[in-house]
Length: 620
Image 1 (cartoon, rainbow, N blue to C red):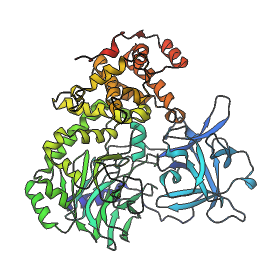
Image 2 (image 1 turned 90 degrees about the horizontal axis):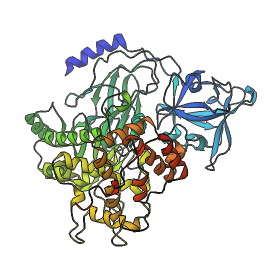
Image 3 (image 1 turned 180 degrees about the horizontal axis):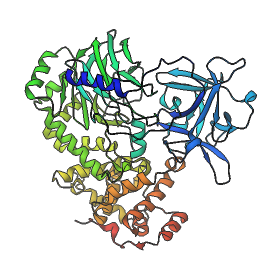
Image 4 (image 1 turned 90 degrees about the vertical axis):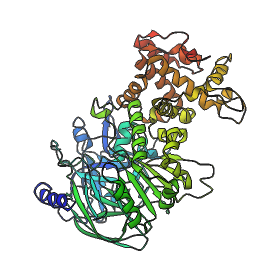
C-alpha cells in the first residue's frame, strides 16, 4: 500500500497546483457564486423583453458573463467583511428587493451607483460563505432548497444550512480535462493511508438524475470517540475552494437534521491538521470536484497519523475471507462494521452484524449491486451521453442510532437524502441473503432513491416507487405482486383496479374511490396497475425512455410545486415517449386533462392509443 502512497506523492509534486495561504479577506475579483446545496451558479437570466431575473444554473459557456460576479470591498465605513456584488454582464449590483409571489424578500439587480450599492457581509463557514444582507440577519438563499434553475433567489434567515451557503470560485477558464491518473480511490485503514479521487457533488448528481441525493463522502474505515484527538497529513490539495472536509458521523436521522445526528465537519488544509472529535462516529472524507475549478482536481493522499481506531471494512474484490476474519478479531474494540463495493456502502453495529450470521459480505454486496444495476437500467442510465450515465456515487445503507424511538415507531426502513436508514435490528435483514432476495420493503425503500421528482406528485409517492420493486421481482424470476391476492379480502391489485375502473365517475386523485375500506391503502396498488399498464403496453423500453425524457426536459420550479402541472406534464411526456396520444387511456383512469394539455397533445400529431389500453392485464 505504501508503494502507491509514495508514487502518488511524487506525481502530485509535479501536477498539483501549489497551495497559497488563504487570506482572511476575500480578494477583490470576478467569481462564480455557487449555491452549496445544488452546486449551481448564481445566474442573471434575461427575459425576452430584456428584463433580468436571478436564478441558478450549471456552469455553461453559453451563459458566459451572466454567471460571473465582480466582488469588491464595500469600503467607506463598512466592516472589513463587507462587499458589493456586481453582475459582470450587466454592471448592476446585487440587492435585496421587494416581496415575491411566495411572500419572501426577493433579490434583484439594481442600477445603483457604487456609493449606494447594497452591502453584503461574507461569513465564512468551512469552504463556503453566508452572504448576509448588511446587518439584517438574513442572507442570500435559494427558496425551498430547490434545485430548479428558475427557483427564486431570496434573502432569508442566515444559517449554515447548505441552501444558505455559497462557494466562491475565482472565474477562470476551464482547462480541458486530461485522462485521470487514477479512476478509483484506495482505502487502507490498517495502515491509515488513503488515496482519494474527487467525487461529483451529490447536489449536482441529484439535479442531473432528477432524484434524491446519494452519498458523496468516502469511508475511512476509522472510528473515533468524543474527545479523541485526530491528526492527519494531507498532500496534493490545490487552492480550490472545494477542498477536503472531514466528517465525523454520517448524515443520519429520520426526523431531519438534529444536533445529535449532524456530523462534525472539519475543513482540512494542505499539510498537517488536527482536531478533537465532538461526537462519536465513523470518519468520512468529503472530497468533491464541483466543475468550477480551473482544472479537474487531482487525487490527494491522506494519512491519519494518530487518533481513532480501525473498523472492520470489507471491500468487495479486495478483502479476502481470511482478512475479514482477522479484521473482526483484531478490530473488536470498534462498535461498527462497514462493507462496500463500487455502488454500495453498508454501516451497521457489530452486534447487528454478528446476529446476522453473515460470513461472506461479498454475497450481499453483489446482490445489492445487481439490484441497483437493474434500477439503473430501468432509469435509462445507458451511458448514451454524459446526462444518462449511472452515478459514480454510492448508496449508503445506514443503521439509524440517533432518531427517537417515538419517531421510529412503526418504521421498518426509510429513504432520505444521502442515505437509506434502517432502525435497530431491522437493518439485519439487509445482511441475510435469502431475505434480501425476497425483501419487497428493501427494494421499495431503495426505489425511493430513484424516483424522479418531476413525476412524483403527492398521491403517487408510494406508488411509482414500486415500478422499481416490480423490476427487482421480475429480474429474479418471481411472479408479479400485482397478481397476489390479499389473504383477508381475497382481492389482487388487478381486481381492485377493475373495481375502480367499473365506477361511472372516476377521479385518479381521490384515494377513497380506490379503497375497499376507509382506512386501507388500496389506492397504492390500484394506481400501480395504471403505471404497470404503460410498461406492458409499450414494452420494457418505455420507462428507461421516460426517465431519459425527464432528464432532457426537466420541469421548472413552478411546475415542480404544482401537482396538477406535474400531472399534465406527465400525460404529455408519456404520450411523447409512447408515440401515441394517451388521452383516452388517462381519461379512462380518471385523470383530468386541461384544455391546454389536450391542445399540446393535438399539436404533437400522434395517433390515438387503442381504446382498451386501460384494460391491459385485467381479468388475468
